[in-house]
Amino acid sequence: MPAEIRKARASDVDDLAAIEKAVFSSDRISRRSFRQLIERDTAELLVGESDGRVAGYAVVLFRKGSGVARLYSIAVGPFFGGRGVGRLLLEEAEAAAFEHGRMMLRLEVRQDNPRAIQIYEQSGYRKIGRELDYYEDGATALRYEKTLRGDIPVATEVPFYQQTCEFTCGPCCLMMAMAYFGPGFVPDPVMEIRLWREATTVFMMSGPGGCEPFGLAVAGYESGLAAEIYVSFYGALFLQSVRSEDKRRVMELAQVDFRRRAELYGIPVNYRSFGLDDIRTAIAEGKLVLVLISGFLMFGKKVPHWVLAIGDDGDHILIHDPWVEDERQETILDAANIPVPYGIFMNMAQFGRDGLRAAITLGKRDSQ
Image 1 (cartoon, rainbow, N blue to C red):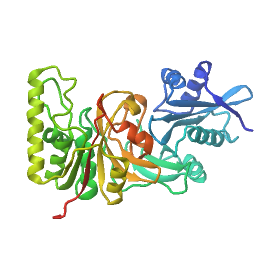
Image 2: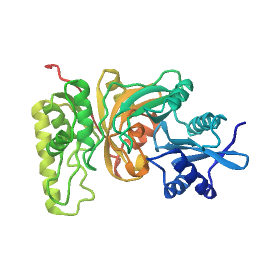
Image 3: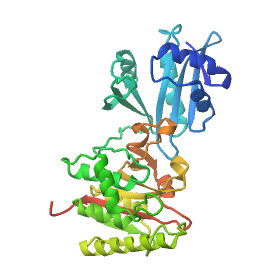
Image 4: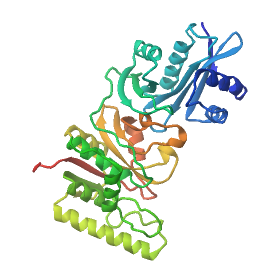
């Protein structure tokens, strides 16, 4: 064996920092970040030990509720190159992802690193994307993916768009659907805010407001999409924690307007909890589904959050989540085309003490 692989310990931080400094000229992981990664329950930091010395490391990140893991970083010290330490670390990173129940492992690699690219491709990774100006020095990143479970690679033609504001998840999901059903449409921050203004329930009361299903359905319809609403509660939504009477009044009036316009446009409304079969049927018919979830399972915050269901592989609902947790070293690979097991998906697809379920199916309008 070129090295013994084990989980990193706090006493490894000096060696890890030394490898980082020797191998990378930019985009380095700090000593503090190494310590945090060792302690995080959503990360696994593996080290390769050879002759009693730390020869290299690999960091794997896990987003809760997701079927994907990401190889955040991998490096081999300058005195241990050519011994197969890197390949062994990669194999152990894949094993760690598999043991965590993940379907696939994703990674980014510099386009100007042909040796690493060759290793990944020889190890069964396939290129799934490219991002310009990804690294600190402006270098381009190539995105790769390897399926760890199942025989069919998960792929999608639905474009991904990362939200630029904390409160625009719903509009960003709408824009992804608009770009999918209307290939000439290109999402951008201006349209992101415009759609939020058109779909939100609160204006200039105590900060930006969120979007509810009727507002999003109306905004989607007015942007050229066909929409159908599922909501398990009749009446104004998201008022449980609102203390201000003025704010409640504005929210209620905004939602009355959205419901009236939905009726005017003939948007179907199902006042019941949607089931997994409703989501799967819509996807099978070529539609996308905007789904309200609780953010707690994925990123530990009890907030209403919208994601876009884009696919179904027979065991998982595949989603685009516009929220990328930069503070936890996430990239698009952690948020785009995420396979979520059916049970976890239905568990997260509800919000609040009353278990509100809301979804909007989106597709092409017949007139288009």
